Image 1 (cartoon, one colour):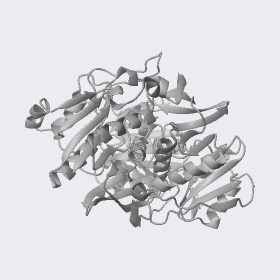
Image 2: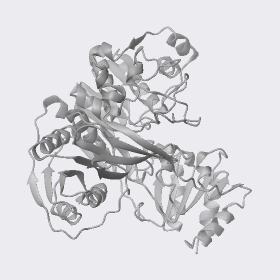
Image 3: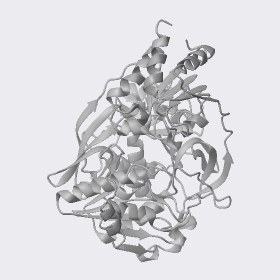
Image 4: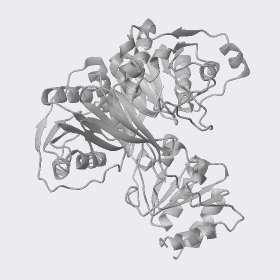
Length: 315
Length: 258
């Protein structure tokens, strides 16, 4: 069994999804990593500590990684063999996985919350807002490509050492590989990490505007909670996508999840429905979020949340 | 500029979705709506085409039914539609969908392909990238702002911590988020004109696909089971009377987070 895990270097670290996937992949046997980005010793050490025995590294420089990484990954897996190739659901993961899938003619098993190898590779995914669990089996020839949602597996070090690393040459793709990154902008964030916080305060489109977003941050700060957002809020540019909760964002399971102006689209529910206590504030009494809420307040969040924040002061 | 926009008709998300117990596929009613995420792709296509006297052609693979969703996109202003509707495509996976769309787009000719980031009902989230690879063009994805630059396209692209500015020469593929533009609503005139716009109906065989390459036979995956996940018990729902925040305070105390 030869398993590969895709890793992207973000701010000098291996992607969180890569460490989660390695924790699962090492139970299947030898695992190699295809790592894209700067290539730092710290990232290699993290990958090794989570069970990578070999790391192949592609530095894409100012090129958009999707096309060259897919081409290089296709060559690597052909040379060294592959039964299973695992990706997270980050933007680069999806860019590389989609292009690799088309390049080698293998379908993708997506949105996985569990992966099993029992002769064939099969995955469990949740559809229709997490109300139905679907098991899909790969029925073609190897390798099987899977896209796994965040926090499907906990990242646990195995105690292994630094892995062997091999640089991979940048493939020459001419036109298809010609997209470049000309600028990068990083927005600073404060407060606890969304995926480990005990309390999460999330806002949706119902908050109204970027200017009004402070109402969400104010409550979060009062509760020492992490701030989360729906995809609509990220798409609107009010907050960066690392705050996105849902199918293609983070999966959170805090003790308490408070959301304001969140309607509860299917793609959002799968990212938060396993929280301990769910509290929802929304002016639409028919909003699907109320179906999973332990306490639902039908009302104007801009009236309820400030009062709540004030009441919590000094506690 | 010839702009190809990929669109999908889906069952109205405001209605409950039903799965066929035999095939595990979503049951698709005759009247479907344009996937909301595609309105952004159509709008971007129309704005870019308006800038240089270009054309916008819609491409969609699905049981066409009443074509209601496609007419919505035509009413926004797209010039024509190419619909690949073929019973033999039922059960196709995302890769087959991408192969069909790429073949139809290539046959028609294009300078730019525009797609949404992911569909609302399937959400595989990889079809745009697959199409780009099949067409051998660069892909700019997760775009939140788009502009045409000399011989190419420039986007602001969502990243985990903010955004990047990225550029690619044409021909290229562009996948947009729902923050990229404000989609227009069809006008009455647009709705009337949409009824007369050309819709080409195409089969998989027209595009050169054999029966064993598509549908269930061509899919490299199969659903082996679908089971209901235990639902959360419904909680207490109250109207805010000005004091509802006190209920939240009480619950936070009970949960021992304050």
